[in-house]
Length: 280
Image 1 (cartoon, rainbow, N blue to C red):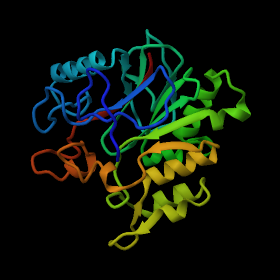
Image 2 (tube, helix red, strand yellow; image 1 turned 45 degrees about the vertical axis):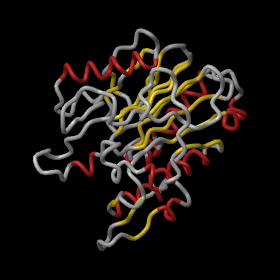
Image 3 (cartoon, rainbow, N blue to C red; image 1 turned 90 degrees about the vertical axis):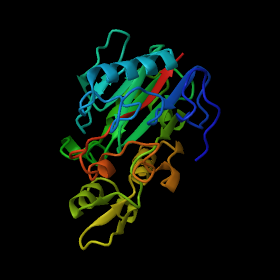
Image 4 (spheres, rainbow, N blue to C red; image 1 turned 135 degrees about the horizontal axis):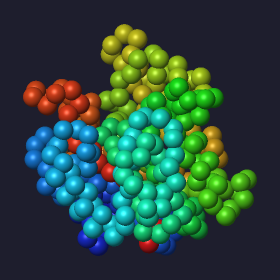
């Protein structure tokens, strides 16, 4: 995983996507580093729903906003497919798992701690979007017609773009951030079945695990497959290799699944990282 030179004022441990984003589009993925929270939320926890002290979360969010120079809008994520169009007046805490904007200095922001963050931009840089893709949102589990969060955000993304619908896909660039890796994401047969029902070829992205009836799922691979099915071929970032796995890098990434097993943490007690994209 290549990390390019950081933008000014961003913490050196945060990831800057290595992708051909147009001039005027900026993006960042935060890590555990650079904040003020105490263990087990050390230190750049951005989640206000995980048990951290509210004042420290607020300070961390203020640090991120200062570093990006953009208004970072935080969603209340529910593993669904709802998309929110953002402007400068959009309040934090709206129920959605993806967001899109054509306005400048407004950062589309999603929080993760094993789920996959997906950032999108048009080649001309006029529209940007971010999506929180856990397996339910990615598969469209419980959504009408099995439409997942990536299909939903792309529909909203395309509506804001000035590019024609048929040409839009090849003029869209996607970046996948760190998430739970394919050697760590053990799932039941219902997860495999959910993807196979809506996504041709999904079965090959599930490997047998050591436990009977279980599979190891390749979450970034499934996201790439869904994006390609929509005609998006310019896909960068997480390729499923070891450096991108949130579970296996405890000093750098928060992980809901890993930290759930830490004595004294309680189930799933861990911080949240953020992926942000904005127009300057």
